[in-house]
Length: 328
Image 1 (cartoon, helix red, strand yellow):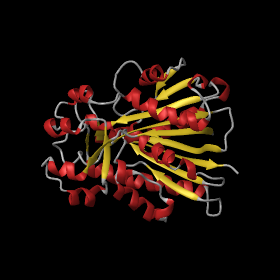
Image 2: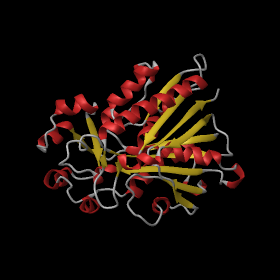
Image 3: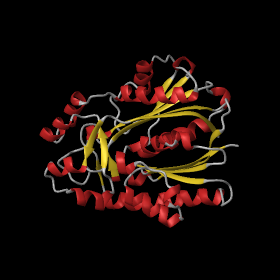
């Protein structure tokens, strides 16, 4: 298990609407987008004029045009997580980062984040694409508590619009930018506890979703959609069996891939609309930060006896499940 002490999130201010995407004249109308992915808006760290004039054909230019670095957005999210945990930056003894689109190949992005915040501590990256947050929690929970510092900062800066080809209607409507941060501990108790971890992968399908070192996001949409629905359903059903009815309020948070996928999973598992927490409609697919930003946005609603089931999938192909249990 792993104790959660604070969560934070940050989304850039610039809104990327369906109307804007329609006006790019790439063959996707507002109605077409809503029908296929159910996303109304998303946020971007890129200037809209840059997207409009270049369609981001050269993803390297996006790094220069971007209004935030990953370290800067991580610092914004971390500030909120630390405040909620009642801690300051000097209390953090380790920083772990994971991003589907890191600013640098070297050094570890965790070091860039720690430098931005002013933390002097061991830093390393752990990345498994959109399932990264769950993987980070799982691997920290597997470590001996005495081998870890009292408090660890885990961040997921996902400024993904920089790697999107805005002349490609298959990917342009999907993604937005978002960053999450979590303060966790293996030794300092909290009423919020991550448990019931399980992870696995299918490396033979590694090429179904990918971002080359220099280039744009690409996926086999049909295959990935089917995988996401089947595996998320399986993970959620596993958690439903482990925590049967009567255990307390049961909520579901999945990878924020698209609303249709999440709705199908909810229907198959008997999850009501009120018990399905998501932000995909307003923020798009924000990669590994999607699920933890949903949790952060519901921070004030977490109460004793709550069980929040996390079922996450990602490139690799990877998957992970966990339960966030709020003790009495």
